[in-house]
Image 1: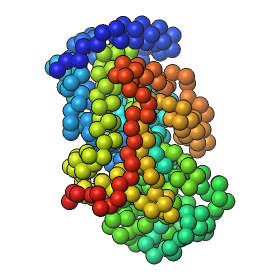
Image 2: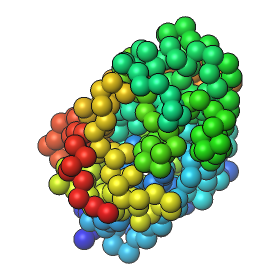
Image 3: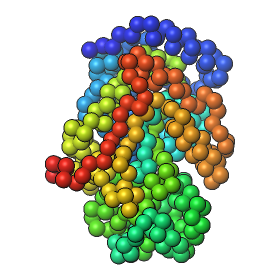
Image 4: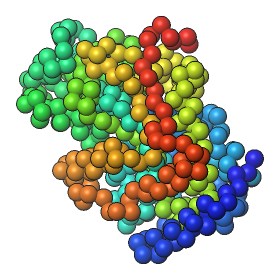
Length: 377
């Protein structure tokens, strides 16, 4: 079916035309997406290895976009093992829409001398999706997260530097006056090897890697963002030339994204989502995938009652996260501005879709389920 918009497109075309005329230079890298109403060819970068962006996993499997895109359109999905890969592909014009974490999403918007990328919607927010401290299995059994944090003092701690996990770890160390003996810059593969070889005491990672390491017996959870209510988040990004030329495609994709998030939030779909995610990755089981998004963890190790908050729009909480993360990225010299340009974030696009659908933010949430609820493999 083809999605036929009514009054939405002219209004958005007018507002976007005015905005882009005044703020967006014509870049050599601009892509021709055709005229409004014509079929379009899209390449979507997404991260099945990052649980908070799993609406992309749902979208690939369920193909909700077929209901809304012009007839004859084609959509290809490209897996990014990390957000930076997707950002680089979008900057190069090889991908047009990206499902990324907060940090790569922010970085992408600061590269407008290469290509103009905007943040247009929130994929989800939580406190224990990217903000997860793991410890070696033989670490003490802590009575509380605060006790676990104190234990980190003088220990060997690893984290992928510049990531959301890095931001959280540094926030914890500062808040609790903890000083590790070493704070190592390691990727997920090296962290896994470090736990296996007992070369590190703790690490900060994101889902589903946290659930994988726990279920493989290589680590155990000790702390999450719940301890200081530190949020993490994922965002939907789009190239500005796509937004400028094809507001009909922007609206179509945002409608499909809304459908995907509603599907993700329904606990009846938990097993199916876990199967989708396992099928689109390697080395991860359905149980690991289910645990990473739907599974319940004890409160003493940072288990959050709500695994994923789903505002869909870029609300105040999402904007506060973007602003805070931008300052962190500036402090570590990952970006050259302390705050993003005003048009880097475009909240009105998702708001318009939500209003037209008669829905309100938040559109749902993923509530933690007891392990006995898992019915998969």
